[in-house]
Image 1 (cartoon, rainbow, N blue to C red):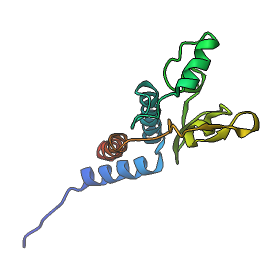
Image 2: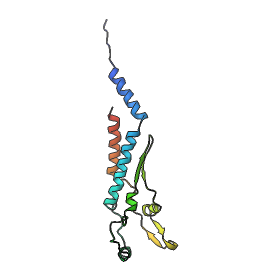
Image 3: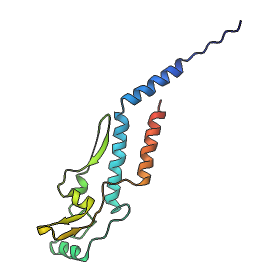
Image 4: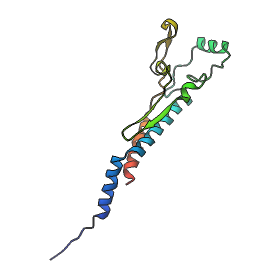
Length: 146
């Protein structure tokens, strides 16, 4: 009679670790949130990915009259860019801002007194294909970490 024994302890341990990683996803979500936060910071640094519509000559002149250098788009004082926060928990990763005027810059639209000013959309809360690939690789690496 032939007797074959299979020692599957390593396999069982690996499966248990994989299950645990699936249950406690906080480290993964924290990493994804940081990737997204870095992507938003890069959007501000590059003034859009793809590039945002440039400031109008009228906007530049108005800023100069107020004593401001026109500066980078969406960064006259830096409040919006510095307000970006990353949050995560076991089920989600997110970035956002609590600045009231953020939505008009993200989506564009009419603003100002009597809604006479047309603000072009300059989506700063956006991810590129490269950012999405980084997230995908992070998930794969997390699961391979078993």
